[in-house]
Image 1 (cartoon, rainbow, N blue to C red):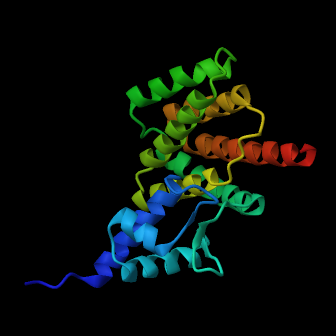
Image 2: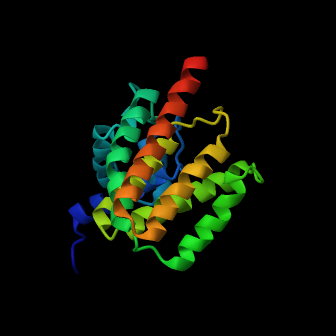
Length: 214
């Protein structure tokens, strides 16, 4: 009988928990005990504890004095840091994606984006689905799997900040998306890189302006 590879079980447990946190199956502020979490994902306490220790080191969870674990919310300062790193990574991804994205996907993104750019649509959930599709499509079209994963992880971490009170700026963001997509469609790497950088600069500026008035 083969003995289970404990290191592999620990890694799988870590990846499972990390995904649950970043996808907000375990939302910010959720408090759980090791026992209940182990039961929920059908895993023993030893690999679970190792996974939680790694997540604690990454700042995704905190251990409370009573032994429970709380899922951390991303702070505003952390969100600003995430936006800084995203600007570097996503600008490069946009440059690499120029001329590489599927024409069908480009057309779909441009068509959906147009309703928000022109102010014809103000659907909150619809815009954020579009925003996810836009950034994921650019990241995936860059042809660098590690870069794609880093961008997607940072975007998931940013969602943990839960800035639901910010006023929607769909038309402005739609216009910025349109410039990026046009540069990618034209195969202009320099323009795509610049447009994505300016888009994320504007995202950051809108956040800072909102915070200054809040």
